[in-house]
Length: 114
Length: 109
Image 1 (cartoon, each protein chain N blue to C red):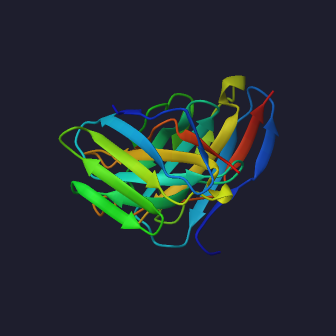
Image 2: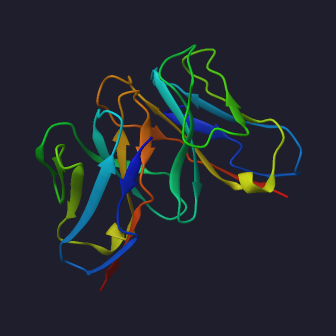
């Protein structure tokens, strides 16, 4: 693996089902982020983590949960999917939250809830 | 929370210059970033500003005024491949990285 990887690339999910989007980075970055991107609304922050063991809520956290058990992984879980969660989800990471370095993005997960 | 505003769309001619403005209101400030995103792809980093002034990177420059909560991205010598969405992002005092809705730039021949 080189960089930041998301899985799956795309998914069609029945409403009410539970789903975990995976995100793994091998750059030893401390900060990680989950965004959803919808047409006309740009990237909206769902949850973030400044370091392993800590997480925080972003702009649109409802219906989503995250964990950060180690540095490399930052999974996003939809406990009970609803159609309004249909979106493209991007995971990102950056070196350290208190250093001004750029964030690197995964390739995205296109999720459709039906 | 953050309030980050940028124009929705801009159109320019190949070889021209385009300036994309971004205004922001945040709880604390730890850097302003510009990203480029082509349709169907992930955002890629272009530039960042921490201090007031102009940062130049080839054909792209970014300016910041922290007192005015204002930044712009300047794209010079526009090429067709510059047609994309340009995203302004701000990191706040909690180190959350929040994005504006993006500006879609269309370059015409």
